[in-house]
Structure formats: C-alpha cells, structure tokens
Length: 314
Image: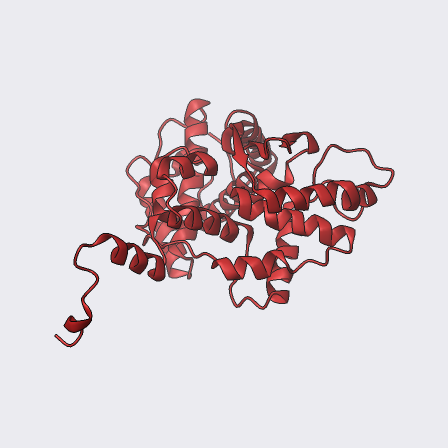
C-alpha cells in the first residue's frame, strides 16, 4: 500500500523510480517524461480531494469520476486522453513491480477523439519562412540551416536538437537520426538544406562555438547545444517576420514535408520510413491533398473530366 497524501517522501521516491523506468526501459523522450509526471501529480491532487490515501483504493468508479471532473472543468478531450494514457503507463509499471494488485484502467476507455487533419504550409509559405533569417549573422545562418533541414527531412524537434556534426553525411546528403525508442534511421536532404548547413558549419557554428567543445550540430549563442524551447521560440518569431498568419511550430514543418511529398506522388511506405513512423496508419493521415492538387489529378486521370468546347453550355 502506497500512501499518497500523507507521505510525500514515499510518493516522490515512487515517481523518481517511474521516471527512471520511462527513461531507461521505455526510452521515453524528456518531453514525454515531463508530461507524464505532470499528469500523474494532477491525478494525485484529485485523489486528495477524494480522501484517497493509497493507490490500491483507486478503482474504475473513481477513475470515471476523474475523467468527468476533467471534462467538467474545461479540459480538451485531447488533454484528457493524454492523462488517461499517462495513467495506463503508470499502472502497467505498478503491476509489473507488484506495487498494486489490480489495474483499474482495464475497463476504462479514453474519450473518443475527432480525427483532425494536420495543417500544413503551402510551398510559397515555406519559402517565405526559410528566407526569414538574416544569414549575415551566425544565428541567422544557424536558423536558416535549421529551417531548411526541417522542411527537407521532416524531422521532429527533439531529433533536430540532438543531432551531432558527425550525423550529417554531405557526400550522400543524408542525416543519421535517432528517433522514438532510440530507433536509428537515415533521412535525406536536398541541395538547399545541404548548402545552408555547409554555410553554417563553415561560418556561423565556428563563431558560436568560440572556446567551447561540443559535438552538437546546432548551438546557442553561448556555444552550448540548442534547446527545444529556444528553437520553438525562434521559429515563432520567424513566422511573424515572414508574415504568416498561422501558428507555426516545428511539427507544422513536419506536416508540410509529408503532405508535399505525397502531393508530389511519393509512395506512402517511403514517407512512412522517412518520418520514422512505426505504423502505416500514422502516415495515412497525410494522404489528404490540397484542393488544387486533387483537381489536377482528377482532370488528368478521369476519361470524361475534360469536356469539349461545344459541351460547356450543356
């Protein structure tokens, strides 16, 4: 029996042990770990209001009250689903360690989510964005290289900031990446991205590095590895500078990469491999096409799509 409210030292020890499990055995990203722990602490606060003192007291009725509490207090269904997912992972860990005797989530379903198509930038918007940095400065050269790389490769933000110089093969225009679950894959980059990286490595990175010693590819102004948060903030600034009226974030460039590849006729399996998706279903959401592309394909493929001039008034 694990006290939750009246022995915070035991609770903290349990959470620290769970964090090690996520990092070492699940290879979870720092972002996932942070979110899961935040969600678990929120759940434990709720247990306090319910006068629950041990994890074994948690049952499916209490969990349903928790979900109802979240929805009644304005949490989006996506946030509720994430919290339920965090609890599922936590209880799997507890069962495995014989810390609790049963899993109350066995009969609990997450709120049904509406499948939303990912938004993406048009080709023209991408050009405006990647050309926004001032490449006469070291930070501008770095940011131009980052933006070109994002769009050329479809990398996740944590994959970009974890890159080392040795991960880039300029001769083959390839980048070696460690994605989710520490799975290694090779992504390709085009000439614009390769050229921007060369300029950054020959000029900007050397000036940012100074007397520091690091293998990190992308550096901050102090010569240290660039953080995800700093990269996200700079991307938002460039979106404003480029005059884009969308909320621009790293994943939007990943969406744009996948959408534009598929619009251009790329095979779904190839895009799956480049994105590092374990399941094809994760990639299929990108099979939507722009209206103009759909019209172009229809007119080119359907035998009766094009009418004769004399048929226009019929």
